[in-house]
Image 1: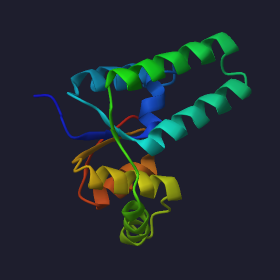
Image 2 (image 1 turned 45 degrees about the vertical axis):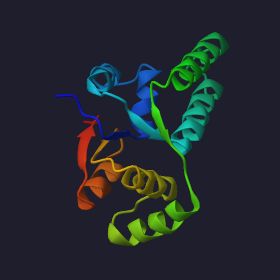
Image 3 (image 1 turned 90 degrees about the horizontal axis):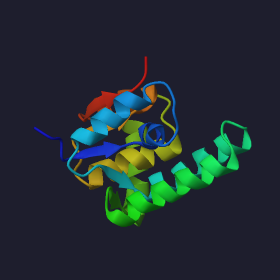
Length: 147
């Protein structure tokens, strides 16, 4: 049965556009989702991560432009449900930082988790160990892509 309420963290999302360890596993998992959920924060982080990789020489300008165009097509086609950030998520993220203490949850990861909760996701797909631990502490299921 396809998962319909899965929030895909940027650490997993980026693996769909850049060949990295476990990219194939992420692609297979995403194919099982009815409508993967991301947030408006994911879009910004995706562009930041792609620009960082491009500047470091991980791929050339042609690949960078092709990946950006593909991501834009996916967004425009509705391949992802995009949950917008709103003012209340910042207070929720602040609460989550305390709720998962002593984990060293980063600011934007707390916002991702707040967005996932706000969108009623029950599962988080991530390639980030701390994000997975925090999600589990909060009662969310996780699908992880790390060794």
